[in-house]
Image (cartoon, rainbow, N blue to C red; front, side, top):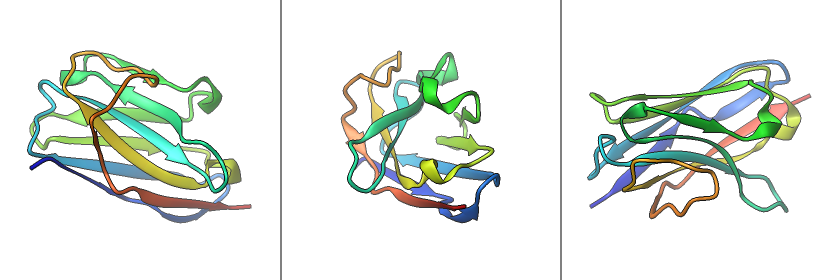
Length: 123
């Protein structure tokens, strides 16, 4: 059974940093790409970042302006998303997703999804 468990969300102030983790079980990051997505209230889900299987390449939404960094730990089967200089506009539920493919893309199909973790940034 595939499980993706997000953690690390919380309430922070504008300008703070937060690191989200996505722990995968039932799959391996050797052959699965991982994506981070977010959905704010009343808005459509949007892609944030993704990392290819084995961590070979990454992709980010243009709107993030270099504030977020994605990385993977193959041994721990975990992907992290480091978020810096957080803004109130970053408030959303953040989801990680996985698909058995070598490459990643924010517009690609992802088969497995986690339950999400809430990130709230106050001004």
